[in-house]
Image 1 (cartoon, rainbow, N blue to C red):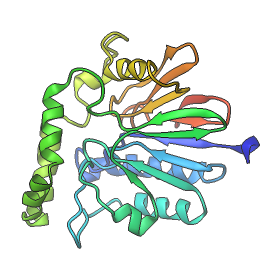
Image 2: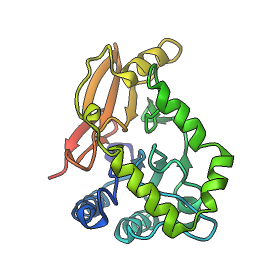
Image 3: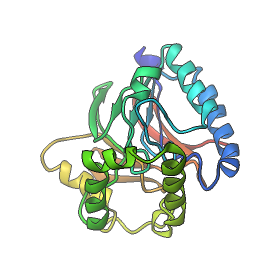
Length: 249
């Protein structure tokens, strides 16, 4: 298996934004990519913001995305391992993926080892210095009481309100998310370098920034940001020896 190891990483699809109709071609493209990697993928990592909004009531999930969910089920049933990390747009994900698709869901970065290479993997929101406003907001959104209050909204109202606010506030891809800030100002670069002070990792792989990047953060360590499936359509693949960023055309 080591000779044919293929691990894929993708992030920030934001399906549903700015409208389901405008999002649909991107969904089709992503499903085509999933169908293509099914031929050789051993593991697939989805690093958050697959949906522009997602909330799980006890017996209801948001409408739509049936082709994406169906293709993920197909890959999982074929034996491909899939891991999902929540992002800042789908942080209210609960156990739907785990129960319906057998896909583990993580809410914070996790360590993995493949072919003796150490990975730290996550969505990337709220990590590193700065962004204090978002960090405070995330604490409010992830508070059980906040989720309990939102759950009392009828899904027709709650989902529509959340989708409206998401697009209105340009959380999908604001200007700051598509400009390289320099290594000294890239929070996830600083976060990666700080982690290396106490433990070695070969690769730090994150999403959230919407900008494909590969930056050397240590003598034998790289930080990789996956970009997005809005304007870049980029992903990463680990072939057992190295990780490469690629564009799906």
